[in-house]
Amino acid sequence: MKLVVIGSGQCGSRVADEFARLNRRARAQRGIEIITGVFAVNTDAADLSGLATISSDYQHRILIGGRKTSGHGVGKINELGAEVTREDGDKVIDAIRTARHFFETDAFLIVASAAGGTGSGSIPVLTQMVKDRYMDKPVYALVILPFEHEEQNEERTVYNTATCLKSISTVADAVFLIDNQRYIRKDFSIKNNIAKINSLIVEPFYNLLCAGEEKKAKHIGAKMLDAGDIIQTLVGWTTMGYGKSPLSLFKFPFERTSDFRKKSTETHKGIMAMDAAVSELSIRCKPVDSGRALYLISAPSKEMNMDLTKELGDYLKDIAPEAIIRNGDYPRGGGSLDITVILSELSDVEKIKTYYNKAAEFIHDRKNRQVEIDSKQREFEEASKNIPTLL
Ligand SMILES: Nc1nc2c(ncn2[C@@H]2O[C@H](COP(=O)(O)OP(=O)(O)OP(=O)(O)O)[C@@H](O)[C@H]2O)c(=O)[nH]1
Ligand SMILES: [Mg+2]
Image 1 (cartoon, protein in one colour):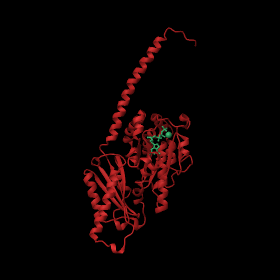
Image 2 (cartoon, protein in one colour):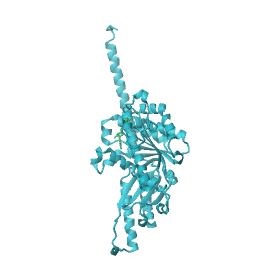
Image 3 (cartoon, protein in one colour):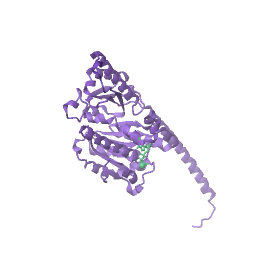
Image 4 (cartoon, helix red, strand yellow):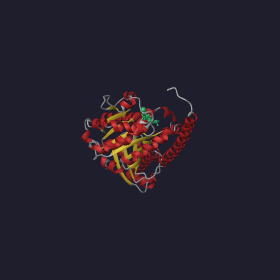
């Protein structure tokens, strides 16, 4: 599957830059292309120049809102992020056409954080514009949710997140939810290592996008997972996970095991990797709430068989009984058996409801505060009524 990736705001641009690296890796390691164009959009000129891999010309690093923000960002006001995107979004639409192999694109992926100003405000507007312009291609959003400490210290964080999520859910064909907090759960030392988090965010896309682009027979599985399977799976709120199980590289000749034992070890390794993928989903959710799911097994062909595929299918059916499940196998790699899982069409995500509820409280409190401020101001004016002015 081939994507055009557009990142907006600082977070979105950095993650898009990571996708540009992913495509370089696919080209170097596997001789295939998985991305037809990568673009970064921002109201902040300095952030755009800080990127590493996206082409550095103005058609790939696109400054918007220059007149209103003088290139210094929108300072967390996502309404302003939305407004300047409505005014300048055409720059992005025009730039997309310059992608060299644009006609091969299967779908768009637009990336931003929900908590900031530029990305949060622009992602729904950009998604709408791309959809209006390219009606025949699905447009997916990848939304990064804030760390817990940001939610606690700053009310705007929750408000921006809620308004961004509500808006994007009405326009995007599917929304990948990425909870920053989940990526520091196991390894707190990476809290200050945003680059590491970004590489973990994009990693599950590697095999997923590569599998359907292979041309050589030896890398095409018994059931190839292509763009059609992915597009059929992605609807509404979506999460993904990635798990690995190491394979022993060296087998001694006297270590011959019976076919039965070999098969059961492979199945066991598959289940371990699937378990890891499901526990590491990009947002906490209940698999039982998903209406569509997908799993991809990537491993050397000798490590895969029908039993393994069936066992993994049964596993997923157990935890997501309502879901239509699609699957594929991808004969690639060496040292590990990797599983990519997508759960989509989620009918409930607790964390999103919490954002909506907290933001509604915030709006209510803000109204009350405004009433108080207005009445204080009136008192002030009243007190100064009989005082002459020098102007
Ligand atoms: N995973 C990840 N999160 C990031 C990154 N950069 C910022 N964030 C998160 O994104 C949110 C802040 O949004 P930014 O993307 O910096 O904001 P922006 O879209 O540039 O908007 P303004 O700067 O307000 O104009 C916070 O929740 C950060 O924790 C990044 O590179 N990776
Ligand atoms: Mg910024």
